[in-house]
Length: 258
Image (cartoon, rainbow, N blue to C red; front, side, top):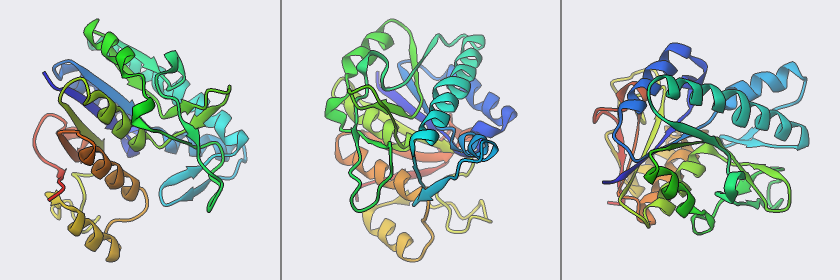
């Protein structure tokens, strides 16, 4: 049986009813499965309340020391544990994890050249201790990862949630067929953000370059699609970007190499 790696993010985390519907659908998916979640908007709001500046570059958060404290509280604390409690109520025996737990996802702090992103970690799928994840899956436990990793020297690192999901899918593909699903508040990649019917059903590398040159794909969608192509290139069987409401059906944007 294939392993499903599902990433949930965007405005879904902020909408209790939408998130509840997604978690109900996720809980009903056949196991084995892994959930990865973001929570950036909550972190941004808390940073604003604490009067910490928020900087984003092409959809990626610049993480200074104070921001790292905020994202650790929000991602590994509030958001992760609320999701775990909800899944338990739905009969899905889940465990909340960061990359530091059991040393599952070590990462390297990104170089300050050409842009200093601060405490941001880049992941090599070959460094992921996927055997630990497989042990949990075989025990009937569903891992739920927040987007935090660690440098092995005592510091947490903020990693892009799409990157975490992609790296996990690649690492787990060495054990079994792995499929990666990115869920958020849109039906998939749209030609026109104001027209939900403008769904792009398939994106290949050539189509992607054209969409970027036209400005149709920008900001947070860029790392999402970059990670999708990286996953396919490294052995993940399928990658789909879709609305959280469509987790259990085939509506969405499929990423293909050709």
